[in-house]
Image (cartoon, rainbow, N blue to C red; front, side, top):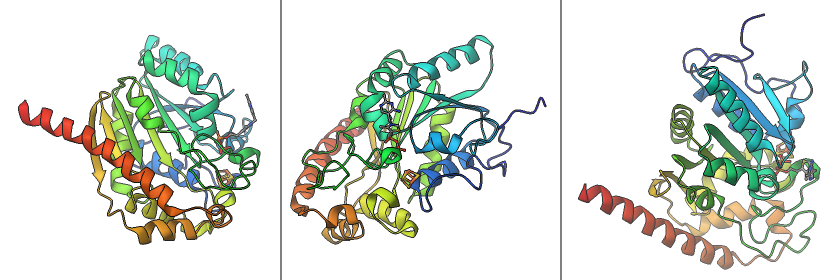
Length: 305
Ligand SMILES: Cc1ncc(C[n+]2csc(CCOP(=O)(O)OP(=O)(O)O)c2C)c(N)n1
Ligand code: SF4
């Protein structure tokens, strides 16, 4: 049994990273994210660290894991620290293994943020992927700091009052080699970024919007459409940031009010609250002003070199 548990051959080894019969709900965006990751793996051998979350339930207990890779299940607070340890062992043993932290928004935006920030500051050789379903899904759908304004969760009955935290900007502020958002509705851009992140060394951070039919009260078949609408209306910017400050916009939204309205209408979590879409449009416009400024600085610095 010397064969590694997961060793992709070519661009798609055919072995699932998320095996059939797993515990994820039908239509789970995180499942699609894992499938995209498998397609991107190529020849990379991987080890995964997964803190408490829906993906940890899918990983289960060895040898019954539904994840087709070696996985260390960690506490929230330690996941990036555990991944740092694994990455350093791989480095000392001269192994090419890529260490991937696969964590939800609760584990990334909130409970594991201290070690995530510390590992980024040390520029540990980790690929950290936050699949963001905008709630604590595994414990019944409580709010996180990634939950958007207006969304009803099990502890924001009238709709969340606060805006979503901008974790991508926080991670980029560490000056890490690579940070990007990935859209499962834009597979070419998504695969390119996953491969770039796998091939880059040092700390890499990817933020993947992961529709959660259970928490979002949406149709399981509409996850990709929801992400497409979120990108189109500007709610989920598709960008990448190299070296902490070189920001590129990868997909141009059209900021269509119709797309935003349809995005909200397709999800029960927004229907139950009296959300004024103009609150979201104001937040979108403010966020995009900042992104455009940073992208312009990047364009200008390229023009002068
Ligand atoms: C320190 C700590 N607090 C709370 C919990 C209970 N808990 C387990 S999973 C979970 C939700 C995780 O949410 P997220 O990271 O967004 O992943 P998701 O469940 O949505 O996949 C919580 C609160 C825990 N395991 N450890
Ligand atoms: S609760 Fe949401 S994130 Fe968790 S497995 Fe179900 S659909 Fe996926």
